[in-house]
Image (cartoon, rainbow, N blue to C red; front, side, top):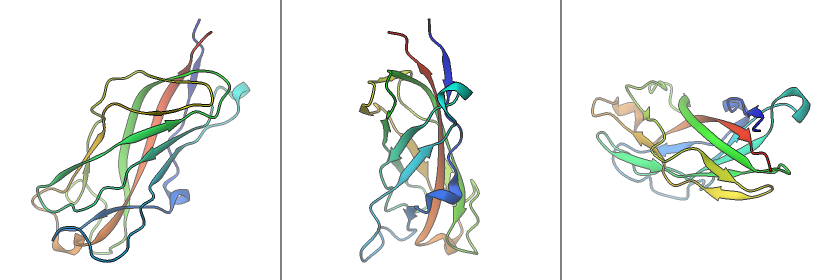
Length: 160
């Protein structure tokens, strides 16, 4: 029997990391290479659990470009996890004149096969990705802006 366990939406405020989207191409100079997206939840008895979703940085976006954000799932729990859905949304932008809206940055549906199994205390690179696109009509003020993307996932505890 499979008991249902949920992971809640990531807290964008707690992340403090961002995607880099540059209208004119890849930004120059050193950039932060880390994008950590965390599925948060409660304890086992409350019906929620913690697992971590880590995404690859997306760089070099410009109007019309679509890049892919790969996702890794870390399962710190003592049982197998079946990740059955993922979703993502843009929550903020580093530029005042570049609001975090689909008109400036689109985060599309995960393109891989789910559910995906993650071993107890294991890590799995998901087969698939989350497409991130800068629409053709994105405002020029988005050049070099950093966007924060919150990712959430839902998983089930897998019975032995």
